[in-house]
Image 1: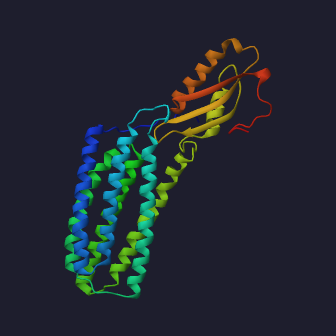
Image 2 (image 1 turned 30 degrees about the horizontal axis):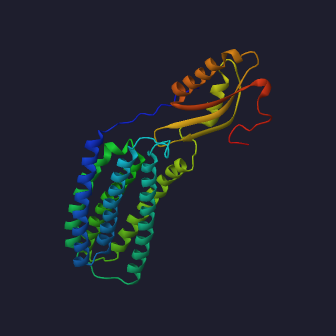
Image 3 (image 1 turned 180 degrees about the vertical axis):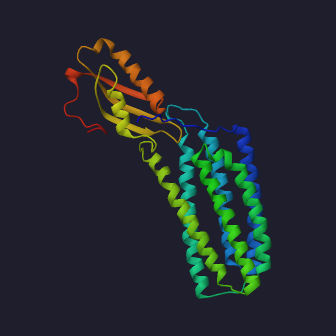
Length: 306
């Protein structure tokens, strides 16, 4: 059964969004300093691990904020598609950073299992409690913006992971206070690292897909061609390229074959195809090279330049 593909976005005022990001960066930097000091004093690897991740949150927010500003620049002769992909590149950097941090934490946790060290649980619990509050505040500041931007979503997920990490650190500190089980500290670090890695690998694929000019994941390429072929006067569509310009815009470029006897209506047919692509799939940028059926490409492939 046919279904329409429409993208619903929740736009946040750019100035308000920038203010939220600056506020989130400030609180995360302050928290990082507190967590590092607390981790050193208490001897908690989980606390230092959480601080490292929290610092990466601050950096991810800085990267997101800079990319957000760059993305607003208009198209030019040098950058005809504009700068919107700056946000996609920023997301790739942030997810890659998350993966590096996750691997580092796994290595550190394994070393702590092999060489256990004492942990002062009460300091861990207090600072992790403060961290949890800051993480939740930061997540709230960026939540609405994350719906509309892969860039902000990457930074937002940094903070979600941090909030869960803080909960895990609180649990570890409490267990150490009650039972003296210091092995819980590296065990919790492994859990934090595992979640970070799972989250990063789950999200990075869609970012790479955009940068590799892949087709939009919510569109079935076969449906796009079939829809064009339903239009009266269309004899075929080939050498098609369907790709994402950025997270919000898709584009279609193809050779459109006009049936014999219909060339006088070529402009109308082209207009009908563009209108159908916009209303049916939300594809606003469509470039078509028109061919009459008698002189169309011989045995062309549907997708690509072959």
